[in-house]
Length: 252
Image (cartoon, helix red, strand yellow):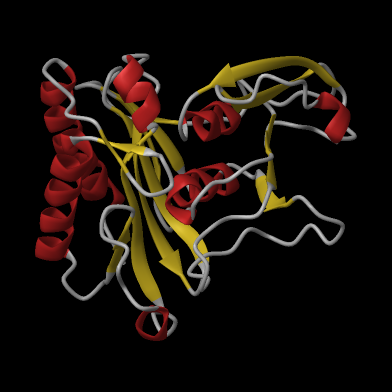
């Protein structure tokens, strides 16, 4: 369907531009919801969309920076790319290095392939429709990600913006809570460096789609944090996600 190695290369190219701007001025503006956006967001978006339209002209695109596709049009999409050209813009502005590029392929509302690239560290995680997750650092060869499993002493990972303890909200043997920005939390789950990501607060579909594809390819799960625990799905009329739980590297 798609060459995930090529999509990863697209993310790397966009990451180079992001890092050029990172070393210069950010020209920060604010959207109506008070979230920041910079020249890097738009530059990355242009690079990614141009590449994807060149190689996969038959697959529509939904991106954070070009979300004006009417639901009546996109509701009939079987496949589409869901993109966040710069996830963690607040971290980018703070120069914390905890920001990423997210590119996911969605099929009938389910993420089936994804790339998360961290421009500051030049590390990418990606998984294609074959459900094998790879990690690649700079010019080194890609390596298959083998999740480390735990039975107890689980590590809960949460957003940098959430300072309260979350362990009490989940019935699992949590021994430690750590914080990290952007979709890089999903990468830690995929490796088994963290085991639970509980999100209580606003996220959008492009924040999570690539991460969900990667975590679920390693055998993890991402589901809505409610009594029914339905799988987190995409291409909804409202692109906001509900609260969710991501679990990986946990041996029941």
